[in-house]
Image 1 (cartoon, rainbow, N blue to C red):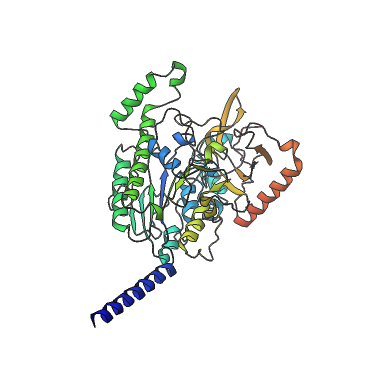
Image 2: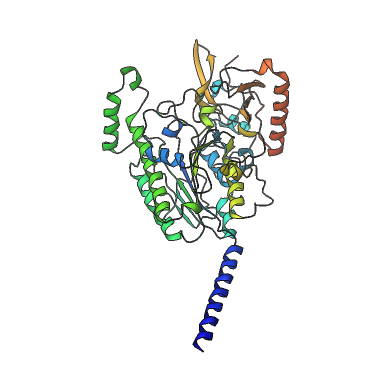
Length: 479
């Protein structure tokens, strides 16, 4: 009798194991956790893994070495708010209508050939006449954003840090600008803010590591005002003294300290993911919202700066790690941009794309495993003016002036970059493989390619409703 009972028990156990194994095999794989860490104003070469010579980013460098370095990653806009709107909504700036945080052009209106709303213009009647297209500082709540796309797929989401898109939380379960509850405030210049944000991010990861989660950790560093912990800045002061005199003016110890604060944050987040044993099911992305400032960032050989559609304004340091999916130590030179993240995250989560809202980006998840995506153009549009390093020209009195931002549309397709200068109805055509600094305009020597790319820009402007300033500015004193 005992023998029969033993045999029956063994058969039942084997049958149960078989059922459990079959059930496990038939289960859908759990969608990955997604962590997106965004720095503010970090230049393309301000990290060790992108070529920094003075700044110390050991955690970011290790992170990039364990994943993939995206050498042709671009922000959706040349400054903060436009990029964040593109990232969250998957739409280009003409659709979300966010071009600049200030809602108007900056700089001397007398040097603006086209009539656009200008902050420094004193003639309010003329400013009203200039307002021929909509500019907003807030993302319309009607836009469906990443957390709203992911929620039906079972995701819990948090935005910790800078939002810069208005009062709506756009579906985040947790929204905090400094790690504490309350309405959004700016925390620029707080030397401890990166640590505070990271503390809250780690708690969110711990509290939600057994369910799919989306964490958007968005730093205020390295935005102005530049302030750092004194002991960290002092260490870089000593490092600066060891450099030859002619090199010292290129680096700012306080800024280096802010870069280090972001680097430390990334290291802490990665360590927490590893500690919890979820690295094989967690995609971690690091990027910046736009290019850097020439006073502190290492921009060469790129042209322009933050606020410019030249490369230094929109090319950003970007790396991704997903243990077991992304091969360690790999590089991707396929251009990607901010609008690609919403459709990519939706695909990874098995979520539906928003409708009827257009999605301008594409799913680039194939790149993570070394695959390819269809060749396409990516676009930028800026209908205003912003002074700074970029497009220099002579002004009366024998002086020069420079716009970093100017009415323009730009496109990148493969190795080719085209900028359409709306003031003069001319273009710049650059081969970025041979001329990453955009110094040699090839437009005159390649008329067929110019015609092809201009037609593509024209079609894109029409399809997105991109505003094209066309009224001459009666205040302009230029020839």
